[in-house]
Image: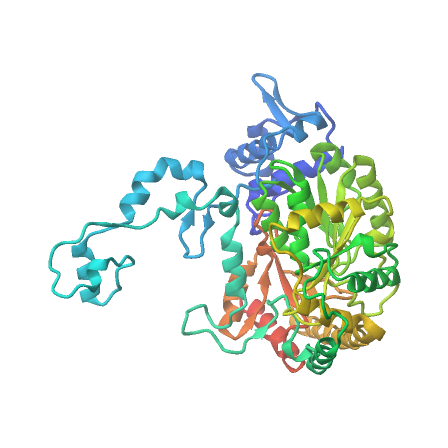
Length: 565
C-alpha cells in the first residue's frame, strides 16, 4: 500500500491521507478485514505527526469504512457498514460554521441551545450605550422604539434585545455554507477587496454567465413582439404547472434531436434548471441519504444537497470526468440514492465524459438502483470537436436518468427558464411538489421560448455562439501556453464555458486571486466547488465572460502574478 502526503498542498495532510485510504477501500484494493498500519508506525513512515494519522483514521471511522479493536488494531469494515454509518453533511469534511447574510456565525439549533445566554446578552444595548455610540458618530442603534419619536422624553429606555438569529434560523438554512457564496461574490469583484477599491470593469473570468454583449438583443426583441402580438394564448392567461403543451412538445423535439427518446409527457418547464435540482431533492432525498457527485462540482447543487441533510460523497475525477472505474466501489460502500453529474462540458472542470464511461455510469446506476441527475446546462454549446456527446438520458430508457437543462447559458441568464426530462411518474411527483414553490414558470418567458424554438431560430443563434466561443477558447489556450509557468496544467474543453487550471505546487488559489484582483483580473478559486471545500490547487476560468479583446491581457496578468509568487 503506497501512501504519500504533499506538504505544499493547500489540502490538510490528514485529508490527503484519508482520501487515499478511502479510494483504496472503495476500489477493493484494501479488502474487508485488512489491518491498517498502527498510527505511530504510519506516522513514522510518512514523517508526519501521529495526530495527522489519528485524524485521518477518525474520519474514515466516521464514514463507516474502518474500525479499531483494542489490542488488535484498525481494520477495513464490510461494505454494509458504510451505508449504515451515521450521516453527515459531507464525506471527507466537517463543514465550518455557516455564516448568515450579515456575516455573523450561524449555529445549528443544537449548538445554539447551549449559548442562549451569550447570544441574548450580546443583543442587549442600554440607552447609555446607544447615546454614546450616536454621539461618537460610530453608528446608530439597531433598535428604535416609540420613545425615539417623542419630543421632550427624558426617561430612560428599557434595554433593547435583538432577535437571537442563531437560534431562530432553521437547521435547513443553517446547513447552507454561506462562506461559499461570500467567496464567490468576492471573486467576481476587481480590486484588492476593499469597498472603495473595487474596479468598475474587471477582466472577469469568475462570473458563471455569458458576456452581456453576446445576448441576442435583436432576436429577443423580435420574438417578444411576435409572442405578445399573437392571439394564440387568448383565454389562457395562466400556464399549466408543467408548462404550455406546445412548449413541452417543442422541447421534446429538441431533445429527440439530441438523441433522447421522449415526448411531451416526459417534459416539465422549470423556472431555471436549479429549480429542477431542488424539486428532485425534495422528491427523493431523505436526511442521511447518500448523494454521489464529482469531487468538484456546481456549488449551488452542493448547497441544495446540504440543506436536505444529505450525505455528500465526492467521486475522484480526471481529464475525462468522473472516475467511473471507482463508481462500483462507491455504490457498494455508500448505497447512494442519487448520482448527480455534469458529464458534458463540466462545471467547473470543462471536461466531457467519454462514451465508455457514460455506459459504465448508466450500467452501475441500474444495478444499484440509484437515480442519475444529469445536469446539461452547457450541452448545446458544442464547438464541433470530435463526436458530439450523447446525453446520458439518450442511453437509458427505463427511467433511471433525470435530465436538466436551461436557456440561461445559451440565450441570457435573465431568461430563467429551463426544463426537466424524466419518467412521467417523476414529472407528476415534481409537479405536485412544485405547488409549494411556484404555480408555473412565467407565461411571458414561456411565450418567448416558444418563439425561439420555432423554425430553428435558437439553433442558428447557438451555432454562431459556439463558433465565437471556440475562437475565444483558442485565444486563451494560446495565451496560457505563452504566459503560464511550465509546471501549470489546464483542460482543453470541447464546449461550454470553462477551463480548469491546476496551479504549480505550493501556490494557493486564494493567494493568487488576491494578487490578480489588485490588478483588475478575477477568477473562481477551486475550493468553492470542492465537496470538502479544501481544494486550493485549482482555479476556474470562464473563457466566454470577458470581452474578447481582454482575454490575452487577463491571462497575462494571471501568469505574471504566478511568476512573481
